[in-house]
Length: 125
Image (cartoon, rainbow, N blue to C red; front, top):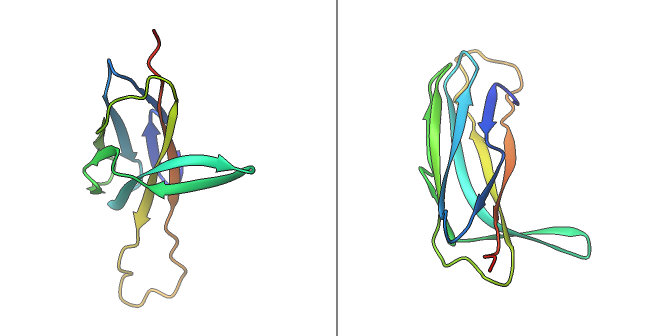
């Protein structure tokens, strides 16, 4: 839970038998929140994270507005065949979209970004 959000589950496994999954986003705050969702392929090179935009995962809807104290289901689907020899890893980035401040607002407005993980597990024979 961060900034009034809850994400469940924080990890999903997709396989030839289960090529779709659902993630529930809950807005625990008293204000509506808008979130942009993007899937990226994830790997590590020399100990550094490498993120590459991908169309191998379908995330729907890609942008949501969640009412106060409400929740939204996000669907994730594998758009390719699962790799029988390699485990492929992805991240699902959740980016809070800033809201227009009220007239006369003089504070600092902060938006949250969360990286969630979705793994494609290899097919086991």
